[in-house]
Amino acid sequence: MLESSCTDIPCAVLLFPFLGPLKLRKVRVSGEGNRKFARRKRVQLLADSIIVFAKRCVRGIDVDREQLTTNVERSLLAVTALDPILGYDRVAQIMAAALRDRVTPRAAAISLGFLNGNEYGRLVDPAALFGGPTPSCDR
Image 1: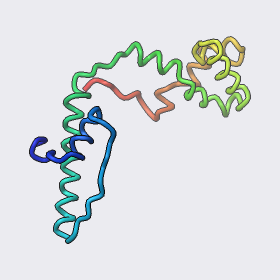
Image 2: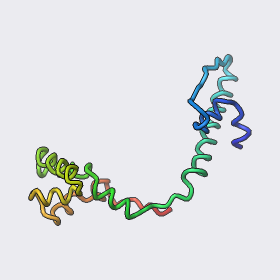
Image 3: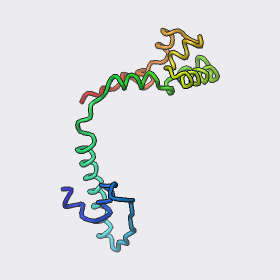
Image 4: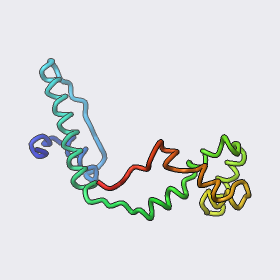
């Protein structure tokens, strides 16, 4: 399917960007039938590109749960949930301390004396912040 619908140069450049810079030309299409044909070709190209991307880039990827947990713990975005409780200035202090000292926001909040570990865990719950249980990565 990919070979039959991907025979022109712009298609090859789109699917294989390592061939060089993306150079697309405007092609004037006259007549309603030709426009419909061109639209179908673009949709087919996009569909083929998605299939190739899934086969060569997505399939076989495994979740590194340890790294995922570390990323969630170090996320500065989650600290913004404390804004209504602690106020903007204290939350900014927590974020600045976490970045400066290269620690988690939880450790920064505890070291600054704004919250203890239990309070932080209750107030900054990633599952609750994302509107429900954390989605499973197992498929």
